[in-house]
Image (cartoon, rainbow, N blue to C red; front, side):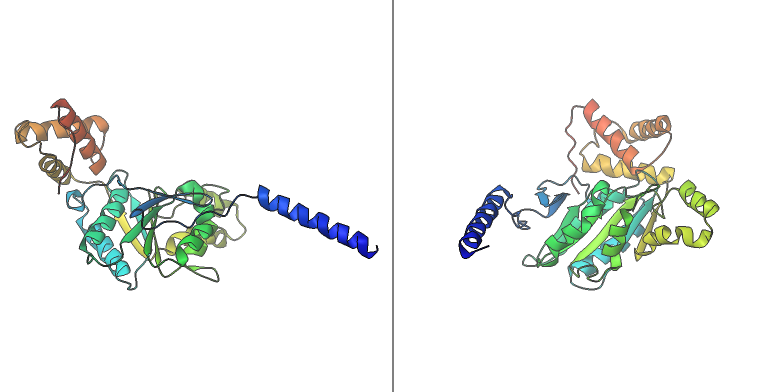
Length: 295
């Protein structure tokens, strides 16, 4: 090719490059972490601010006082720039695992000095775990500190997305950013169904090694907090706390409310914080009251 041909080719390639640039989407805007204290991660690049978080005041979480205090202390240390552990909250359904995470974040922010940076909460859905490395790129350079929160985390047969989570917790070359802590809730202590673990052991040449990689995921959480079904006294204490906070003390006498609350739990076959809150919603509705909880 002579010089004229090379010049034509260069012009053609330049026009193609310019056309591709016009067709390409613009780079995503940098997240505005000042917009709110809580966000929902929407892959691949969006952090949606949540200005009104659906949460229960921490003082109303009854029957889980020990777990509450441990998680608060761990979160407070992290917010202050001190060492802290990733946390796995596991156990009985409806006992306040996710409510505790949201309540602790609010309580810690309320206790921080007015001029201190707020602790940010980012919720990531279970099906988006594969995008965790991308999310880390967003928050790594920020001056804020972040709680990454995944509710109802578990993994099923053939699911390999747990590898992304393992790398974030404490593996990989870069490791977990110093300004990030990961909290997860699950009904399973090892994040895997028991029958899956047993099937892996039964069919493997080396049963121990067959499940070690997946079971070791829960070991990456330095803090384990177990939640168990509450007693009748704990359930009634939850009811009393909600009644007072919702301003429902005078709608019926205390004995009637206790009787109705126990009957409500019996019809649902369980006692838990969730069942107690559902009863309070019904009680408020029957007496024409909006449900607004005050600490």
